[in-house]
Image 1 (tube, rainbow, N blue to C red):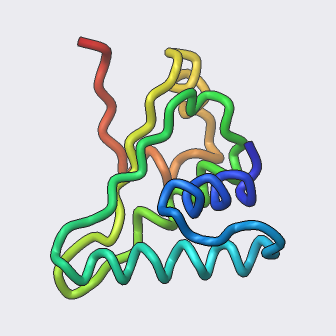
Image 2: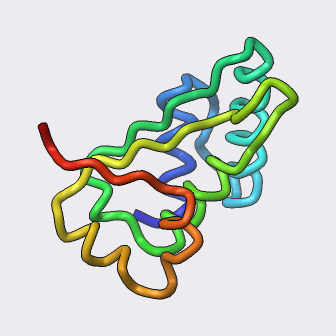
Image 3: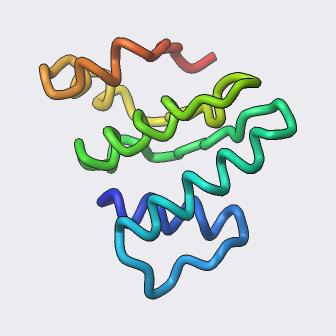
Length: 108
């Protein structure tokens, strides 16, 4: 999935308008929603299933969303559920920034 697809999916799940928006408008709408929700003191959990299908740009988008901070703390937490192939792919240099902020766990 591309970043725009990911942002549309997030807005859809948050029951917010997402159709007909440019990628930048989608990004701004998601950011606004996450920051507004975090005013209550709890981050929004972005649970992404089948994350091995995300492009490098979409993973970077998730990293940026997870970097959103408020005075109360993080505005969002990204949880990726994926096949083991994603862990292997994340060993590549282009994912260094994402991996630096991540914790990996195996299936229980």
